[in-house]
View 1 (cartoon, rainbow, N blue to C red):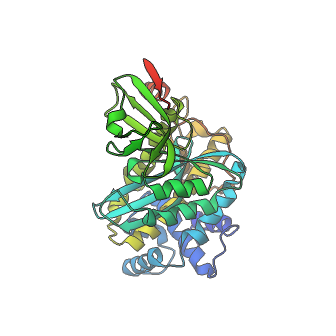
View 2: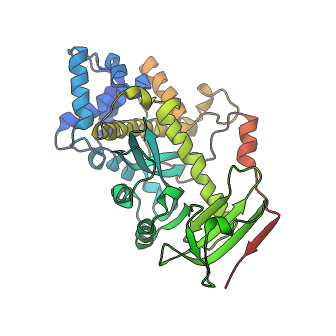
View 3: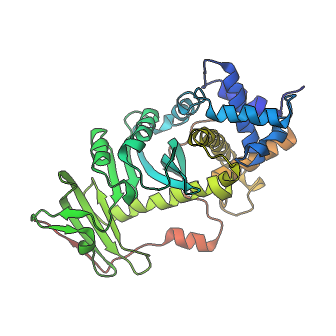
Length: 385
């Protein structure tokens, strides 16, 4: 039976960089990624129509796919890391903004990811799923994810890590300092801050009045870590901001940390509802979910690269009706794939990500206003010893 069009295209491109010990693993991964891209769904059942080239029953297909997502040889080191190293070549020596975040699934599993903020979205660098019903995890649980992300980053890149208050751990700050990474971590209200004067107060006692910002250089946190603190209270924010940083504090501290929200939240939304509907997968096993997210990340990365190629070729207007780019690169890539499959056109050769960080997609004037909003403080106070 003739092999499916997209599967043939994917395996021909992936085998340039992915070299598993068993080539059958590459075939299975390419089939699964092609099925994800065509079905637009994370449910193994939804992949079955796109595996019809195999003379198997549906039950046999599902048994094989269940083994695939649990197979220890199908891992990020073999199948995902080579792609990242290949397609991040242009970022050698560049400034990179990374996020460390979690997402809880069914109040039972916790997805931990380190992502690259780029183009208004986040690109997964490393991930793992733990059987853990809380978004707060210990450093020893997510340290392997950090090490995995470190292994795929281009040489001499200057990294800044953004993390939520659940990651305000001394071990993380020390780890980043050893790697020469900058870091910005949101602080909890009850975190004790020792000022240069020797006075120790909780964060909530260092918050400014509304529309003001306080900057505290050279504070000590978690016993022996020297950091900088920036706090702000805004009338249009749900709660005050308090950001710990390895950099000298300024109003740009808030602007830099704010980029975390624009990147990671749409990324998790793509997993859950905007693209792949991970909730419909019905998998309830941490190992299987880690394998499934590996396949989803491969599919996402390939679609993103194709979306970028579509824009660079000047063909965006054929699939996006907005005057300016209104669809994410992921959504453009998924539509481009559907078009290629429908017309039986070959996929263009995948190319490295461009180092220039394009602006996020903007589908409406209201979103444009939100993206262009500027925060102004009535007063900024810097405290020193």
